[in-house]
Image 1 (cartoon, rainbow, N blue to C red):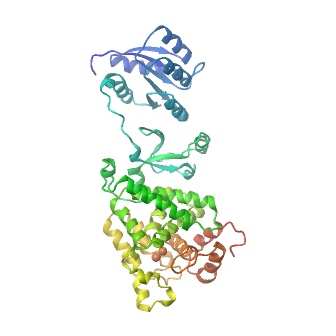
Image 2: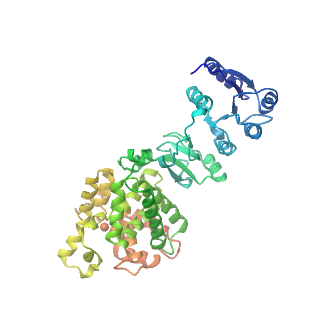
Image 3: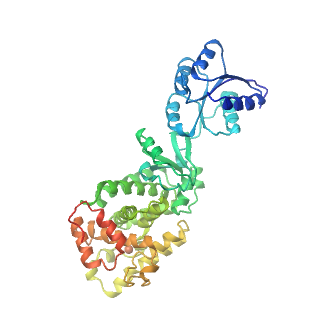
Length: 451
Ligand SMILES: [Fe+2]
Ligand SMILES: [Fe+2]
């Protein structure tokens, strides 16, 4: 640090915190004043001037939020807020009120010193704070089941340039905290995209994202995502399905999609699905949404599992891009044995296409490969016995059958949930995984459905 001495007021009702801050700041050459609450701080500031205030939030008499409001109404003095982890929500308020930086206890002294340097020494040559939005993805707060440990670091977004960590990988977020977030109007928590994509089973290189050098324009991606959302709502929702569960799963899929569009290769795969046949893309989206719904209904709560279902659903029929469209639209009864075999190659083609991309984890590849295996051991391509089929492939298979029958396509007029479930019950129940099929049935709001 340069030989600049700043006057800093430390406001905290905990003597030890004040003493620790004073010690470290004094060593760095600053002059430190102390106040044990906001009221004392106000009295001090009425009489004297400082270059910086570092204040706790929870204090008797006048608290940190009130003090901050008072200071900002009078001066441009920078204010750093420090707060206990349990009061992290107040930091949002503090941020809106103009706090200049935040630290949660226990904080690192180095972090505080850096902030001071940034706020006071370099303020003459400020560079605009970095926009972090491209580095984070948002996760619906509904997805946080408090009994589960989070598998990655989780953040709250304060602004486009400031995210604060609220849970470490391996922590649980207690339900009271989740409820408190919701009560304050927080609909989303955030994760770093690189952490998140690993969790989902993507191996894509995100360094391009970090440098914002992707070859696909943000505008193009946005347009495609918007179009996709419309497709989901228009085609994938089937009357008689629990709308709340559907909406939740659709949000989960949108998150998966937002990651996929960060990879040029995967994004191109989606576009190819769509250009090969729009209904094929709609079908893939449907399978993705219903797989997530079924997985959740079964009781799977791990985010990695649900997102893997979402991603596998999207790409399960990618092998069909190599099958001629004429063949695909021909109804199954009209296909010759040769043609049927040709179509059935799509499962292994899909696996090979994804293998070459090297951007998806092995289990997603396996799921794609096995989505037409069935529980009688008579599926394709390998006639794998039930116990050897990947458990997520069994879910995809149920969702695939459901979407094929329920959603309008070249070979289907679209059917009601009741009709579809009955048809699946009569003709396919022996092939389908019982647990997954039962979960699908219980997602149907119509009570008469089921056996
Ligand atoms: Fe398929
Ligand atoms: Fe399919």
